[in-house]
Image (tube, rainbow, N blue to C red; front, side):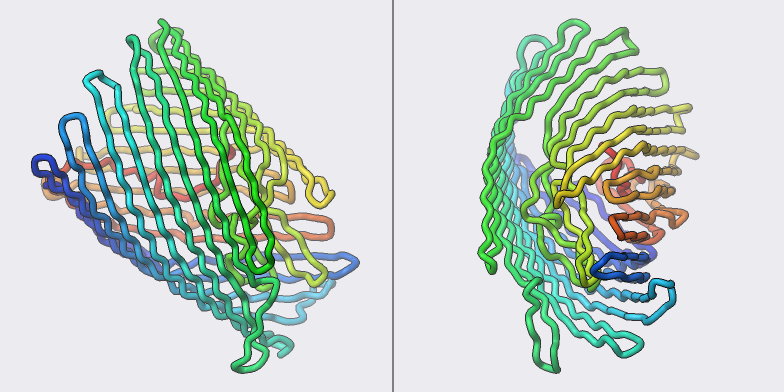
Length: 565
């Protein structure tokens, strides 16, 4: 029997407890996990909007404060059954239930064109957000007498159900506005995945891999917004009342081979993928059916110059699918002046990637230097548009093609046995260009990102780690994303004769992880700053029962800066 027991406490409110236990007896290994968490996450932001055209003109500033508070319970049970030394069956069942109570307060300050304050409008939201997620998974793995030969089969079914119910109240200080609204939004998703993989070694260093994969994703998004005309009488706003059915079926097969020829290593593969997507807006009877087949080749070559140096060359063609939120035409109505809508007609992004690199192995580390070029097709970008009433809509579309090329450096270096360092830098130029509503959108930017982390072990049982992340400003097709940086720190110490570990960490030490952006169109200007979660302090205790220590990774506790890829 072995397991891990963990407790966490943090500020702003972040409390949790979990255990992960395995019990092995003869041919059966039983698995049991449970986790409970409560979070109370404040966020804030502000923006300024200016618009001037023949139809309308406005200037206003917005201050946004929101709080997402809630709990979640996660339980997972399963077993490994070892038929013999070469055959294993694993089955797991997971259940997650969460409930959030979210509140937000938006304050709009309206100005005339001379920048004189004319009125202040306040809008509040109270939202409940229960969610349930069920996942069942089955895995079969077979190994053979020949080393490296294996066969595996995976099947997974995921059912997700979420309902958002909100009430809004908007009032003005000069009594020109008194609006009550409510919205309902169900987001149901079903996923089924089946995958078969086979690996067959040949010769001394060769390997052949082949596989089949089928995935089915079914989305059901029913949404509506109502406005109160008088107490007890609500009317539906027709622009925000519909039901989306999104059915996606993907069938794929791949074949990949690799081998070593003296100092040359070659790996080549080809994946074929057939996609069938049906999108239907049921209340407006709009249907879109898309079917297409794509081939995705890849090749990787490496040549060992000597024991310490290797040259690498690679090409790949791949795709990136839109996420759940980008597909939903309705997500939230908390901001009555700026509406962020998804697009169920989004297509994947496709990328041709070329890369050449040099790997240097040193006594105390490695340095990988590379140059790359990437051609992206159907790049998804958020387009901001303003109508004659001053209502702003932000919608993702497959806007443009994109070309990016640059240099990347990855360094790992251990000055001493108790000090380890990693560093990464990516310097690039990116050019995007595309048409939307007969208007050309184009950007040409030079930018860079970097990441530096250092881990020091003191007294044999105390680890201190610091990481610094930075993303330089970059141009977009409608403006500019400004720079962002943050620092994370962590300190851990083994206790209880090595069976326990106490960890203290701070995420975003300087409270600087704020997304800042500028959007500019004809007659339109917007500047916005938003901080999803402020600086956080965490204290975690872990106890291990008959289990070795797993290395902490404070790097992954920080946020994502959206590096150019």
